[in-house]
Length: 538
Image (cartoon, rainbow, N blue to C red; front, side, top):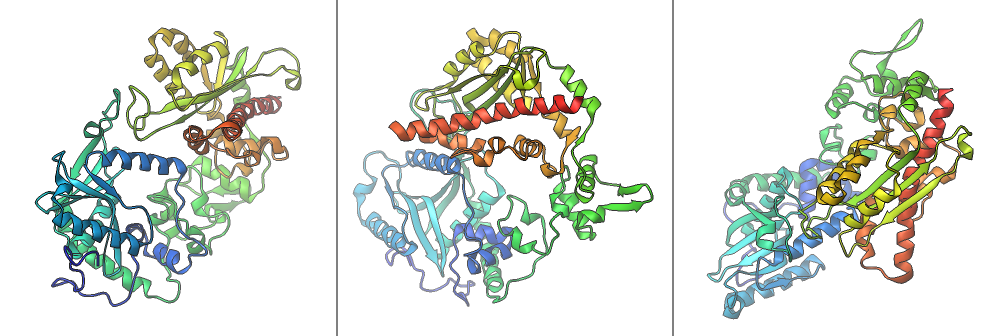
């Protein structure tokens, strides 16, 4: 019960029976239950094994910034700090009671008074409302704030659950909507919330889902009443909309090398093979006098993965393809890697929501000569921007200085680097000629591994740089990303860049050095891979 003044939650409305078994249900738990009720069962009854899903710091930062901006659409806003649900509900009730009698809450701007993180519940179904707006005439509107440029099906279900809880708790909700980001918005000066956000009115849809939400909750209560771990067949929900953290439990009877580890295979095909009883790698081969043969319907990449694993084959290399690739390179040879982040709320002038902002690069240069690769002089240059100002101008100016005008530029997934360079050229017309000159000389190392011209079973079907490097150099700890202190992947680099503005002195310098070491390994990795390819081409 939130408040006895505005809300009446002691009895269920007609047609809505009281809960037979207590169940502490939240928005996250409800959505988990829609994806897979067993996942919810495990997270409630085996919390020590699974707990809650982890969210990246960048996603948390983006969400926080969007929430803060959204609150500026309402005035005044009372923010309820996160606490125990009971405490937050009590604070919500106090504010609602005051809103019912205090006309000063609506004076001034003519806009709504609002509560951020309003907490409501009905029969142990709890909902934290991103924004609960109170109109001067006593009507209420609820808004879910999404750090996204579209409203997903899952977001619609989330709002329907919140609407259900509010209505069942007795709150007279007049409108239910989603505040999401306008991808066309361009920052000019200070952020303008009225232009940054779009509103999708889902009141009618949420009202029409009332009975459906009620029945789902009843079904979850029955399912969660099981004392033993329920059995449930593997399905699309194990992998979509995200990989389930409980898969290790549901898939514990699968062999180590199973159908769900197949590379270059659509999820629907994996599930079809699983339902047909083709579960282990051995189920995809037929024994022939001349050796194992992959059954029809399997991609060449998956077939190679299966045979290499079952037969414990050594490194596979198409030497002709390797030699042809090396002949496309020229001197001098430079290696380039960018790091970027995508702030949900435009951080810099002239940018849009989730625009890709390059803030860092590493360049290794290899002047070509006839000596052995180990004796070649290796050049290294790098750049790391200041998060307090748009780093792209300084980055562009240094980039065109650091790479010679006639150099071959090797990347891993050239589409990414070429797109970033083209964006910088469009942004800075005076540098466009030099940047597009770089763009025209970018080559790609990735296809050689994507097309399995070079493959080692230690890559486990992947052709990402972080899978290729340790597979080709398994005994070199200096080439192992897991040995890097602090920052060891692109997501962590993006998170760290946003964190730099909150650090000072030695802490900031330490994190900066970790970021530089990570990006440097990306380009040094390509240097080492090219050296290995030269060995294989012999």
